[in-house]
Structure formats: structure tokens, C-alpha cells
Image (cartoon, rainbow, N blue to C red):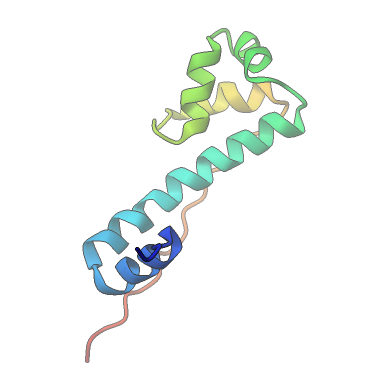
Length: 102
């Protein structure tokens, strides 16, 4: 039996399945936010439990925020930033134009 690597399937699906590619690309923003939150907590030298205490919430809430599965409110992001000694900055950037099939 031939072994199929996940990376090979991913490349194939990104190339041949527009719905897969669209959904995968939609996750990029959530992943970037989760990564930034993890990096902020790490730079602050805090565990999830310590951060939760500073935010007056639970470790489970911090874990969910860092998982990328939830979309936090700006108020929650502000609390997270303050608890990690950071400030929040939100920006709007142009969407990359799609290539036309002309």
C-alpha cells in the first residue's frame, strides 16, 4: 500500500478544489490572530493560568482564545493586551485582487 502524505493532498486540493482553497484561506486570519495572542503571552512570560488570573477569567477561556476557534470581541482583545503588557492595534488592509480568467 502506497503512503499518502497530508502535504501532498493539501497541495492537490489547493490546486484543484476551489472550495477547499477558499475555506483554507479563510482560516488564515483566525490563525494569525491566535498566533499573535500566543506570542504576546509568551513574550509576557505568562502561563495560560497566570494570564487568566490577570484577565479575571479561566484558563479554559484563554485556551479557547489561543486556539483560534473563537472570534473574540475587541473588548476581550483589549483585556488580553492589557494583561500581557501590550497594546492592541487593528488595521484594515486591501484584499488581494483575484486574477481574472480573461
